[in-house]
Image (cartoon, rainbow, N blue to C red; front, side, top):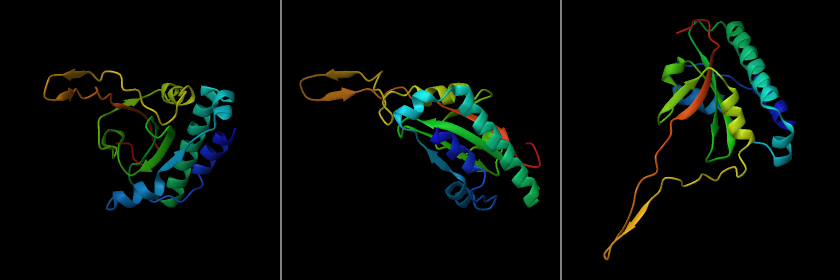
Length: 161
């Protein structure tokens, strides 16, 4: 159950809300969480979801105590390539999270957590959809279809955007 402890500790970690310096926000406020196979097998989706919801509430209280007047979002996703759950807080609305690729917002954190807990080979991504074609001179490989990242987001700022 170490993962639940780490999720709770995120709420007390350093927190930077600096709209003019999103990079500093990202570097300070982003956490990489992993779990051993035994931990994954013993955790329920509902327990991990509840831990993240408590952390989001605690971060919201901290932001209000800091007097930060703007909007902020706490968000969680499963990084399949790294085999980790990741979470961050930023002074951005949920529809402007700092991802380099496509993402889809989910009101339900359960599927994000379930994907992490059942990931039998963390850090290994399947190469489904990759098709090769050979001819006499060269081999061509089609790009795998990239699915948008599923992200759960919670408004934690003083202002909802």
